[in-house]
Length: 322
Image (cartoon, rainbow, N blue to C red; front, top):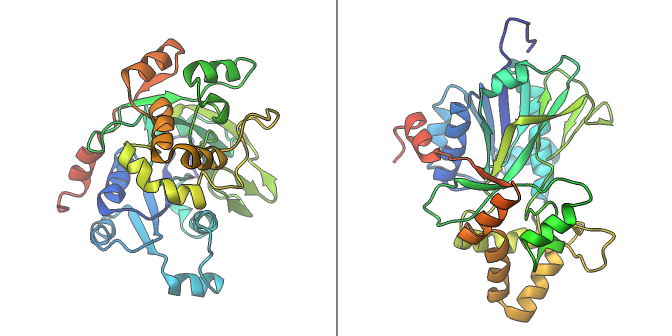
């Protein structure tokens, strides 16, 4: 889609999703209310409770990626979910995103936040900007039924980053990148109409060049609900440790520091020495929405308040659900 000077930019998102119906519908509803013109949702596992509600919405396109789907496309299901994410995002960009000006790849636990309309922020970008990065905020974990309001910003790069990290997290700081448990890269809005394009989880390649025409997008936050509660974090821990963001091949936070290991090794050691109590100690220092951690973050200028009224958005966008 070609944007004219008098026309606000339109945007869409693509996501590969394996989640419960309420989580999927919350994610979809929130972004519809943030102004998304199109949602391309690739279901990595069946969700019959959400499917009819998604299909009934005029701005949502649902693709069920079952065995037959992958057999036709690739001769079989790619074993790693990271590969499936990239393939689905690239397909959406190349074949489905013709009616939007920008496309962003998100996970189901990531929610875009902007004080203005996202479309207005994208419209203001120079014509030679081809990709724009929304940086993450990481949620502090409360109770499972409580919507996340408190987030932490990443600790800025620079000579003070390591000292700040260890002030905030005296026991585990040396194992954290930017003070985060999950990624610090954020996600990219990519201008449509480029070729040839391959989307990755955090980056884009255009004719072999990585992230050409790149800029930061400070007006848009990527609110990442990586850990909403202790129970939710623990339920996802084993998969993340084996195949996800804590897997063995991930780099340590500080490559030049021999005392810094990646989270895979840290968690394995904590489990071996203390069992679940070791994991809980990490969670309480780094993730928990405690008065103490909020005060420490506030003192460093890193506490953010981002109320995500996800459930209310779901009730408005999908009133027939439940």
